[in-house]
Amino acid sequence: MEPRARAVLAVLLLLAAQVTMATGETRCNPGEYEVTSLCRCSKLCPAGYYVSKYIDQDHSVGECRECESGTFRAHPSEESSCVPCSQCREDQEVVTECFPTSDRLCQCKQGNFYCDSVDCTESCFRCKRCEDSTILHPCNATRDTVCAVKIHPEAGKV
Ligand SMILES: *[C@@H]1O[C@H](CO)[C@@H](O)[C@H](O)[C@H]1NC(C)=O
Image 1 (cartoon, rainbow, N blue to C red):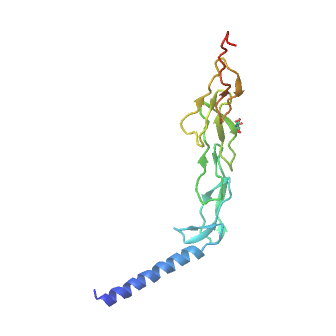
Image 2: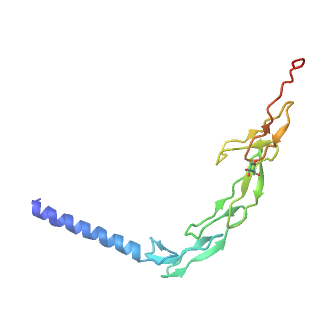
Image 3: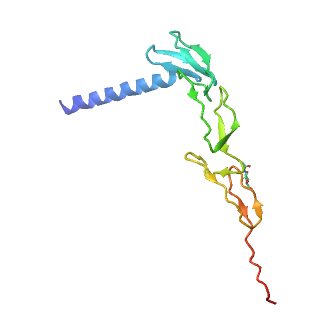
């Protein structure tokens, strides 16, 4: 191919790409998504719902159905199902139950386990016991027990 022809082709390809990008950005309004297979814009289903049917009509809402029990969606979406709620482990307790719009929240079982990292994905740690010193801070879900420094009474010195 001649250099000039190649340059023209490159420009054409670039223009085509820009047009596609521009239409992709502007076709759908905020709160809408593109149903690619249908070439339509559809409104998002609200949080707590999933899209149960995609419809072939521009700028209208598909069928939304509330998340089934044990599942949730925290944000408006175009997804065709909800996300299964987290399960609390054996060493955890429920802080907040699962709702259609929010996941179940778990924390380490108060008084026995704690976790000082942000996402306690593996397991909680067992709380420290203050052998024969006093407890300064009892163990809670996010912090280990703080024991008082043990004092060794030294008898007979003046
Ligand atoms: C645990 O205790 C620490 C300080 O004693 C406190 O900052 C934190 O909020 C407590 N965590 C919980 C879950 O109560």
